[in-house]
Amino acid sequence: MRILLTIAWRNVRQHKVKTTIIGLIMVIGIMVLVVGNSFMDTAASGIERYYIKNYTGHLMITGQSKGHLTLFGFQDLTAMEQTVPRIPDYAEIVEFASSLPYVETINPQVSATAIVSRGEKTLGATQLFGVVPGQYQEMFPDNVEILEGGYWQPGEQGILLNKTVAELLEKQVGFTFRPGDKLLFTSVSTHTGMRIREVEITGIFRFKQSNIQLDMVSLMDVSNARALAGMVVGHTDPAELTSEEQRFLGAIDEDSIFDSFDSLFTDVDVEEPAADDDFWFSILGETETRDLSNEEDTGAWQYLLVRLTDEKYLRQAEADFAQFFAERGIAAQTRNWREGAGALAELSYGIKSVFNTVVFIIAVVAVIIIMNTLVISVTERMSEIGTMRAIGAQKSFVRRMIVLETMLLSGISGTVGVAAGGLILLILNRIGLKASNVFFEIIYGGPELRPMLSLSSVILSFVVILAVGAVSSAYPTAIVMKTSPLRAMESSR
Image (cartoon, rainbow, N blue to C red):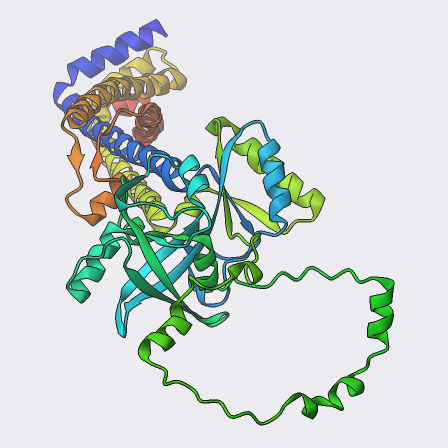
């Protein structure tokens, strides 16, 4: 082995031009791979921390459904075919989640999309998260910055309007919205029909870390959010009747009820006051005077967000919840943070996949270039190799010599490439990369990215470069092995 290393190192140093060409190709390739993958790993890690800490938690529990269900509702073609399901046996699931030692906190939510209007003028649309302020703030204490006003108080209703949404609405009406103003929210669905609610603005806020999707999200009280999501239903628990009540009802049939139906009505003259616009507006949208306690199913939730004490418990949590749902026959399921985060988070990971595909194509091109260069190098040394074989060197010895030479060059080039990539990343980390537009903000997972050297990218880079070296040396080695020692020796004449 020592002899092989000595010969390989001599050949690397002796053929300086070809070594430089091959080494430079490898160095550039590894540098791009290290910088690119570290860049994407940092962005992916940032996006993960960003969503888990501020919006989704580690897990999202929902009712069972098909399609791509996110915190924003269904984000695929099934959105027109189904509504977001309620979580069945919600209280039982909450009790189980609270009993798990690795669950730090939970937060229930409802999601709805509504058109916003004022008077007769339609202003735009917003995504609504129906939340309980105390629970929401407990789970996400650092993601909301209150600019004016505040959350609604317990037992009250209202909306915390996103500053971005407020600015868009203000352009339509020409004045600034303030806490105390009211807006009309209308949701339309093929399943639940049209729902209209008038809601008072209790505050203006912004998410401290946001994106174009979250910029359109406002926080609303659960009662109105449920109504707009089509979840306002009456309680349907069966009534428990005494034996006397059952006997009484059993003696009454349909005919006995409706035979005297006409006697229930009589002609009455009523002087009706003229109905003005405020009267009709209050019927459609006013919710302040409504007694929602008789209408609302307070156990109706679409999402239960779960934050763990440590991410290492994620697989265990998924398994424990799946087992619990199966044992109790509960039609619920868990979804990870990426599913909950929605299309933009998936887009960021999709961009990473595209980058890896581009890197793979570059690697293939590099293999072809390196292979051609090695073929030329080996052909020029054919007489030397023929002489070695003529004096007794076995084919296996020659094969190992060429492969080891390529691996040695790959290892040196890989090390230089990783070092160069690490230096570039250090500089970029100190400078910081500002997102110049929405596209880069999606990739970065925020307004700024400070990339760091990723251990996984270093390992991947060495694996790739060694694989490239091994594949590149295969063809030149095959040429040498097919050439007889005599012909190889004659090639120098």
